[in-house]
Structure formats: C-alpha cells, structure tokens
Image (cartoon, rainbow, N blue to C red; front, side, top):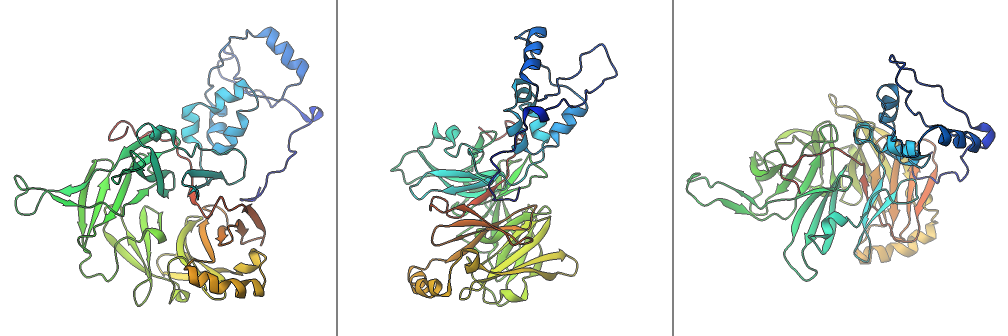
Length: 431
C-alpha cells in the first residue's frame, strides 16, 4: 500500500480460501509442534477446543516461527494480534518486538488547542497514546519540541501557571523518560574547589541513532558564547563542552534543518555566503562541510531543508514565489556532487489555480507564513509529505506522481515523523 494511502476495506479471505500453513517440524518429535496460527473454520475450532483445555498456555516457540515474526514490521504484528489468542501471545513477546524492523509509523504534532496528537501514516487508530500518560503523573502541561526518530524531546511544566519547566527525553513505546540536568561543568581556574560554570539550557537538540538504540545524546548551543557547544551523553548523565568553532561563521546547531544519518548529524546553514551542510559526530566535533546544491543560493528556513531516504542524504528547496520544488540526492560522499532527483509544481499537488495563488500571496506575505512546507521525507520510499496554509496535508510519490490526501480538517498541520523503538535503556538516568 502506498505510504499515506487509504487501506482497502475488504482484504480478508472468504471461508473457502482459508487454509492451514505447513506444520513446522522439530528435531525432538516428542515435543508438540509450535502453534502456528491458522485461519480455521468454525467446525475445526470446535474440535480443537474439545482436544485442548481452555486454560492451556501456549509457549513462545523457538526456531523458524520466531525468526519469521521477528522480521515483520511492528504494524504487521499489531494486525496479527487480532487473529486469535495464540497470535496475540506470539506477537506480544518482547523479544520478537525488539527484533522486529521498524519503519515510519506516523507523525506527532501539537494540536492548535494545545494538546499533543499522533496520526498513523496509514490511518486508523493511533499507534501511540499521544497524551503521554506516563508523564502526566509529574507534569500538567507538555509541549513537544522535537522527535528524533523514536525519542521525543518535550518541554514540561508541573503546573499550568508555572514559568519554570523541564526538558524531558522519553520513549512513548517503552514509557521510559529522563529530565535533562542543568548545563554545568568545572571552572577553568580551579577544577577541584572552584564554582562550576553554569549555562542556560535553551535550545537542546536530541540525537538518537536507531542503529545503537541503547543511548542518546543532546546538543545545546550556548547563548553565552558562540564557540562552545554543550553535549549531554546518556551514558554519563553529564554535560561536557565541545569547542572548535572559533573560526566558523555559522552557528553549531540549526534544529529546524537537520538530520541524523550514518552516525553523524547534518545541519543545513543558510545565513552565509554559500549555504553548506555541517557534519558533526556525536561528540559535537565538526568533521566536514558539504556544499549545498547550486539551487540553494538565497534559500531561507521554511523553504529548504535536508532529510534521509534510502540511506542517502537528500536536500530540497522550494522557490518562494513560484513554488517549484526541487529535490536533490547526494549519491557519492567522496565527490560531493548532488544529483537533481525530482522537480514538481507544488500548487498543482494541492489543485490550486494561478488565480488562487495571486489572491492569497499578499495575505501570506502580510502574516509572514509559508504557503507550502515539506515537513518530512519517507526513509524508505521516494515519498515526501507536504502541508499548505489552508491546513491540508498530503503525501506525494515522486516515482508514480500519485497524491494521497492525509488530512483536510486543519487538525494536523505538518508533523514530526516517528519510528517506534522498543529497546530498553535500563535504569541508568531514566525514570
């Protein structure tokens, strides 16, 4: 099914089409074969109930069945739970879920009235309880700041009227969370007895690598200085300074235009003579600079950004007057040569005419809003996700040219892409 599309309403088998999959044999024939779930007829189910006690507990099998289930996406496991009790038990096993490959499941977003929402990519009941009930015992007000693949960075208040807040990192699938501590480290004059240097935590940027799901780091540019970047490591639970920016003409972190891939952070920087992408390691050290595509000259935030798809770095730019979108891909890091992948007229995707654009252009300029925005790119398909100022969201397949409306009610303005992760961080530094 294409991402962003609507599932067919009739995909179930009829009674005549139902059949049993082949039995799985084991070396030890004395042990019963694993209960491979099957779509049985009503008569067969009655016979099985007569043969097996109702209280019998089905053990999770080892071998081929576990391997098959652990290779299925999490959304498939959720669907299979509805088949029978045996399926539900098999597909709920934590070891199977942790090993299951994950992909883009949907989008988190802050609703206009103030609460947090989650929309599945394929529609239907939300995969995640977006109210984050595990945080509600400690906080009355929660605002989502960032989603780094599978972890959320939230700003949390203990009361509605409280001016003080905490920055909280959490995993909505495992309900683990931790509060980021204040930024401080020993002073330079006397590291043993001197007062620690303290800095204000204002603009943290969460970095989570799905390939190493047992850790995360947080970058935080310091408003007191431009040449030091604070790095928080989950493994140590402390902030450390990362310098080396004295001779650079751009800020270390631009959260609005960044992507994590291949173990490195890629930050797009506009406000320089020639736009570039700064590549940082997880220690915050600048590793290299990649020149942005030629079409990026004059680009501004909101009309350009970067993302990762098929394991490759992508960049896109939308002309702010004619709204032609161009998408590039960096196929070879060694040559740093960008390849123009796709161009499309964005108003046509929203079925807007030239008169509609002219009528609304002045209003858009007056309110300082972006008429169109590309808010995500699919990590595995050539699909981009767009929204317009008329509160319409859609997905666009660059291969087939198909457009799939996602929301037209205004409840979902953009969104932060979310890929579920069930890895356990352990007890260190986490609630």
